[in-house]
Image (cartoon, rainbow over all chains, first blue to last red; front, side, top):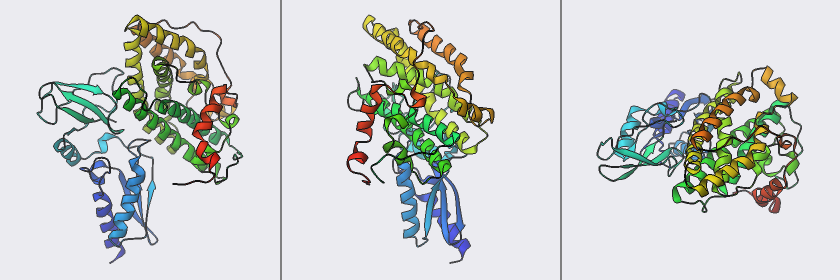
Length: 161
Length: 258
């Protein structure tokens, strides 16, 4: 395998690792892999945190190293970079589609709102606009809990960030 | 990792980073004390989420402090192996939680400041500081919104909730002066455009807190004497008790790892 082939494969494999908390999303959908490069003989992968305190980041780094090792691409190491900061704008359109298909309303609206601004979130189950927020802070750092007044189902909303 | 406390030789930037990180860690720890005790399930999850954000922000700041100090310390050393007088957080964050109204009032007063502070830090000429600011301000915007909504709900709620949150605001007000403090070392960083001047944020903070308290039918306490000392390691008795819990594992089992 030439170094270029190895780098290409590493890029593909790192991008296909799934988010441990929202396993429908691959890292390439999430937009957290910032760079994959070859430094002498080592594959170096840059990732950026979604939320400062996201406990998944450590697992993501480990999963990338494991996946690369399994594919015979070691040695590899994962580095965390902070700049530019991740925002929900980094989520791919494929990521939006996958979230909705999983019953998680994708981020909607501007990433920064007025203090008590109004957000409209479409129900991922029945597409109704008749929805309301139950709590701003949900099962993971990136999600809020909502419910639909039409189909009565609760659902997660991937927060704008 | 040894059990004895680390000694620090801090440059102005490293000291600055530790102070800001200490604010986040201590407030995050206080909020984590609500885990399993909040008045309702949603609030339990919310306070734990906010605690996680604050501790995450502190980790970024401690990590950068370790890098700039270049003395081989890690973020864990800063959190677990400094004694109470080496902590330089503001006094407000170490105060006990009190009742739910007091916890929310503190989170509101702090978030109303730190949200605009992080937004200004995002314009720092230092790319790492700017990135930390850009990351943190997205999170603090949610904290401010959540705490602000609660202050209004409690203030404009029953007579019991109104008097409790008013009492909390009155109790915490003398601790808000420290939010705007910057010593000579920090002034140097401000002059270089590395960090924002907290004093410049005071007017906005007064307007914002004034608006929310007004909507909550609460009274803004009069300008009066302010508590000081946290930024120079002079703490209330509460921080030592908090650290005895936070640092218990490393103090009792030095060097323990996962």
